[in-house]
Length: 168
Image (cartoon, rainbow, N blue to C red; front, side, top):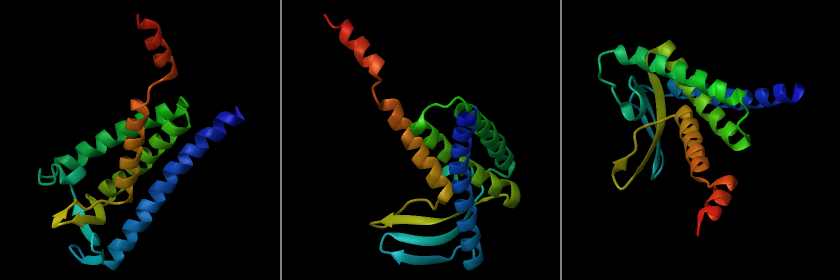
């Protein structure tokens, strides 16, 4: 039982670290910048202050307000599903991935509930093309999803053995 509790705490700690880092960076940027301000850091990286009322890439940002509650409900349901998956102890790689997604989802959920929008501040660009601004929570979600996709693409030992037996 202690081993099970230790594993659960470890993954929640990863989620909490993403959540705290996200809130701390958003608070700093919101204090240091006015909405729309841009600070050029490198030729390909800016700090900006943007408010996103939609989802990823400002999807549904201009939808009139209903999307705030829609995305809130979706985030709560997905987060609950992630907690259930973590409780099933899927292995270290998948657990880290799920914890990153959970921490990011909760960071953006906090913004959506308390501010009515998500604070974005990282802007990457090259050759005149700008990636939509994002934040630490978005980064956690993205890295976690890429890890899950990578895990899903890896061949399983049992599948390899079964495939070898089927060949004539």
